[in-house]
Length: 101
Image (tube, rainbow, N blue to C red; front, side):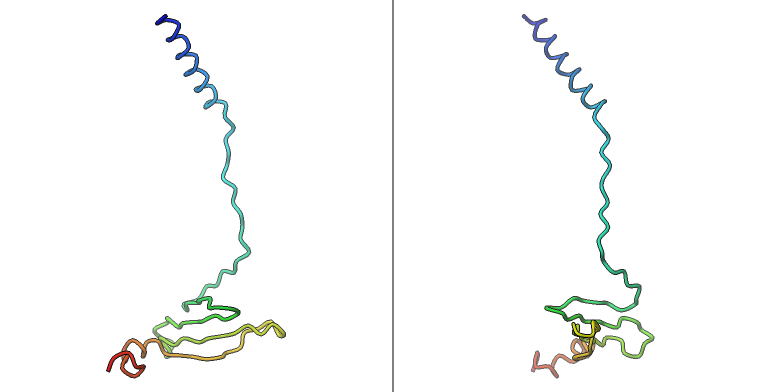
């Protein structure tokens, strides 16, 4: 009875090895997303709705730490400036914004 069990076990191992050897090689499928690649020293953040924020991170620009907020105008398909803020000043002087007294 022991040789019968060994024969079944070895047959199962052989079948598994054959499946591994003849298994088709599946290549990963690369899906290109229709994203936009922007090469810029600025940071662009998607806000709610059709709004984005552009934060200047270029030390030599003169407006380092300024956040410009734009909204998409669907009629002209372009962004319109709707506001700006200096987040650098927000962190340097929080008392001016009511955070600390």
